[in-house]
Structures are given as structure tokens and as C-alpha cells.
Length: 498
Image (cartoon, rainbow, N blue to C red; front, side, top):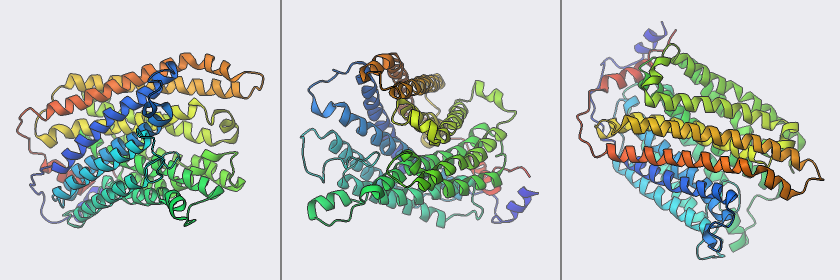
């Protein structure tokens, strides 16, 4: 019954044969994979320096304190946000039944994005040891990029949003599939969070004496509103949008419930905005705000439960596809990691648990399970499915794709387990004032070896998927007709079940 109701809302004509050039998406894919490999190396270097602290000793711009924020910001903005733009520009035209408003605008945004990330990274590495506040880091978690970089990235993102929204405006299908909801949410929430979090107040205060920066408790609160919004209102909805498009496409199975996906969308937007303060449990913020953050952290089970129920309901009875369907393997692996990350997060928000694991390796492991295990594996799944269709050529090697999955999945599993255990051990040892700090370092060393080993596997997976994508772009192929499939997905919301 639900299918017929939705079909009545659509235009009279059945399908539209459109040739998508995907030029902007290709540019974004190239930029995203280049930054993925670069900042993956940065991350591996930070892990190795825990094992070999003297690595690159004396080279200022390769000190741990510089390459670590370069890695964090580079992975978020160079890889995650960029691959979101790539996947959005790929599937939004297909779900709206029209061409991307402007491929040239998309390519222009990709160039601006390259400039913004490179300028921000050079400012963090600071090879010239400059003391200019317009060039240096702002010194705050996840908002380290300098104001010049912020300007490039903000203009690029807003311009790309304009491109996507003009595409929405030209759509042929009135009913909007849930992946479009998550795309629009990501566009708006990212612009909102990024502009607030990177308001160039610090530099303006120092240079001009304007006194407009957030100060004291407000500064700490805004920092972690932004820091957690990067995960919850930028990376997460982007990955969910990718998952909702590529899950039914790669499995060739109707989405379990379109209504449930919309409930999850609105719940995510309503709940996640309150979560940032749980990073400051026992910190310099009001007690009531800490309590609110803890409550809303547990309320995240609503959107998380909605997505996971929808996800596993969709592939119920289709598990045999995992033997040969590599995109689906990535998507399922990402969903499993999403479940783990969203069990860890609310638990960390509890005061007794936070007292033990906050500031420890546990938090680092949790962040990697979320941003690599969930977001990156989901993005790999979408990319593996979309690559041969963008370049109209078969995937260069299914075997390489398989290896990239297992290296990535095993790498983040080893990393996550090692860091979760070491964080608990570390926190418990810190509770005992009679244990010297250097003793905690000695005890944690084996876990840091495992961290570096898991990181090496993850980086190997990054290079394999980048190599497979590059080689795919060199083999000629005639694309099969998939226009009717895309029209059916857009019009009927993948044939949702009543």
C-alpha cells in the first residue's frame, strides 16, 4: 500500500535516460583519496612515535605535537568531508532525475578544497616556525586550521551546497529518498557548525583588540559543541546518507523502512547538538549542562537504533552476498563499527566511567572506531560501488578490493581493542597516586605496538583502495543501462515495505 501511495506522488513519465558525466565527483574522489593516503601516513607516524619517540628527532615540523593535529584535521576535512562531496555529487543527480547543476562549479570547489586543506596543514606543521597568528594553529581540538584555510574551506563548502541545492531545485521526482534528506542535513549542519566553530575571533582579538572571542567557560563549551558536531552533524549524517543510497543499490534489496529512516534523521538532528558537553564531565561547565549532555548521549540510541534496524532489516536473508559482494562487505563492516562506537560513546558520558577513561587511550580508540571503522568503511563501500560506474569501466581488481576490506577491518579491530584495553588500564593506574607516571608508560608499551600495527594495516588498505580506483580509471568499459534502477530507487524509495 505504501508503495502505491508514493508512486502516485511522482510525475506521470516513468523513467528518464540521463548520461551523467560525473566530472565533479571524479575530481572530489581524486582529491579525497590523495589526502586519505597523505594523512594516513601522518597518523601512522604519530603511532610509531609512541614506540620510537626519537623518530625524526630535531625536525621541528615533524614533531608529534604538529603532525598529530595535521593528521586529525586532515583526515576529517581532507578525506571525510571531501569523500562526502564526491558521493553526494554522484548520487544526488541520480536520485533527483536530473544532471548536476554545474560540473564546473563542482570542480572549482575541489580546487578550493585542495587549497584550504594544504594551507591549513602547512600552518599546523609550520616549517618556518612563524609566530603569525593568521598562519599558526588556533590551538583548539578539531578547529586548529588557521583563518586563511577556514576561508577557503567555508567558501568551497557553501559553493558546493549551492550546486547541490540547485540540483535539488531542478529535480524531476517530488518524493525525496532518505539519502537526499541526509545530504541536505549534512550541507546545512556542516556550514552551521564550521562557521561557528571557526569564527576567526582568536586572531582578530590578538591582532586588532576586538575582544569578540568566546572566553572562559563559554570558550570551552563552544569548542566541544564544535568538536562533537564534527563527528555527529558532519561525518555521521554524511556516512548515513552514503549508506542509505549504496546499501539497496549494492545488495539489490529494497530498503526495509523509509519511514524509520526519516525518524532516524530527525532524531539525529534534534539530539546530537546537545552531546558536546559530555567531553567536559567534571570540567569547568555547569553541572546541569553535564547532566543534559549525558542524558542526550543515551538518547542517541534512538537514531542509532533506527539506522541499524533499517540496515540489518534490509539485508536480512541476504547474508550470502557477503561471500562475493565487496561493497556490501564494507557497508556491513561500517555498520558493525557504528554499533560499537555508539555503545562506547554513551558509556563514556557516565560520570563514573568518564572519571576513569577520559584523557586516556580509550577516547582515541573510540574516535578511530567512529571515524575510520564507521565513516571510512561506509565511504569505501560507496566508493567501490560507484567507481566503475563513474568511469564506465569494470573495477580493476576485485581481489585488491577484497584485500583492502580485510586489511582495513582487521586494522581498526586491532587498533580499537588495543586502545580500549590500554585506556582502561591507563585510567586505573592514574587513579593510584603511588604509581609513577613512567610506570604507566612501560605497562602501555605493548598496546602501543599493537596500535602501530593496526594503523599500518589501515594505511595499507588506504593505498590499496586508492590504487584500485586509479587503475580502474585506465581500463575502457561500456556502462550498462542503470537509469531505470536509479529512477526506481528515487521514485519508490526502494520499494519500501508496508
